[in-house]
Image 1: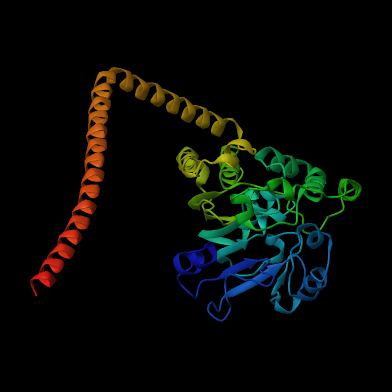
Image 2: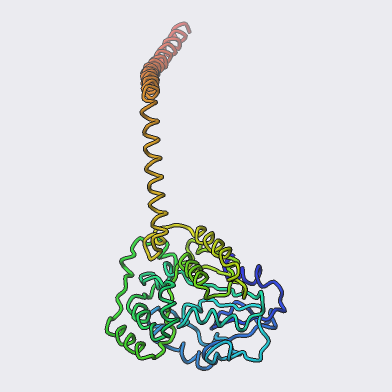
Amino acid sequence: MDERTYIRDCIIIEKDKRILELGPLNRPIISKDEYPNCFYVDIRDTEEIKKLYSGNEYLETTGIEVDTDTIVDIDYVLKDSYQKTFDGVEKFDYIVASHVLEHTGNLIDTLQDFASVLKPGAHVCIVYPDKRYCFDHFREAASFRDAFDVYTQGTIANARMVLDFYFSAVEENSPVKYWHPEHIERILPKNDFERAKTLYEEAKTGMVISDVHYWPFTDEGFIRFLYDCIRAKLLPFHCKEFHPTQEDTQEFLVLLEYDKDIFVYSEKELDNLRNNIESAPLDFFNVYYGMGEQNNLKWEEKVEELQKDIIRKNQILINNEDEFEKYRKVVKEQQEALEAYQKQSEYIAILEKEVVKYRKVVKEQQEALEAYQK
């Protein structure tokens, strides 16, 4: 079951709940036909979205194509913040954000803003692209450090993420190509530096660059980001579920529960997040692409365990050398017996051929005798 189906079938089971889906574009997870209290919100109205996806820098860089005729109608256009946009509107039971948060200029501020439109105990369903298995593969991994920098200085601090995106994102977006990178060198970035630099300079002036992936996280990296946000007492959310990226896919799922009292028992939530971090599969990319010292230490411990296991097995071989020598002797005797048997079989086959010839001669002589008698 993929993440989109899981959200519909296993999380938002009650169809009458109030749901706010962010940036649905042409593939909303929640259908209005099935969920009558579902609403779509975006930073642009429907016509502006269709115009944008008729062609832009983001599409050229990533190779993504969108059929503008399939783009859904937007109910609310975001104005400055969710709090201002939905002032006076009944709060929601769910926010659904699929491939949206990586586009937000100020990640921490956006997540804080979510709380202003949620009912107590409401949930945020996040489907997020894992940087290792999409066009962000060759980019530097995001971190709490980067997000806090933007949170304190404003989106002008995003300029280096803009440079990283337009200089290092690639057109290949098939997760299978990255899970089985037999010829990864063929899709290394070839982007024009001057173009990336121009957009970087524009971002430094405060200009908002459309549709950048500002926050390229891995599954484990995103949970570490939440862990640091809880330590810093910045986000009022409990991580209720975490589904790491599965093989040959490029998404992971995080389910957050709004809890304004989370900091009263933050140590419990930190334990929960530590367990989630531990559950993320350890693989080549976790170790070597921006996952920090914690996983590097795990890798070193694993290597040390393997080395100890090899030494132990070698010692067993040494201790049982006599037994192995006896076994080799038995095998040799059996081999010699087999060879003798094969020689006997060959001799018997020769004898059988001679017997056939003798029988033929006897038969001919018998026939000759009978003819003579007649």
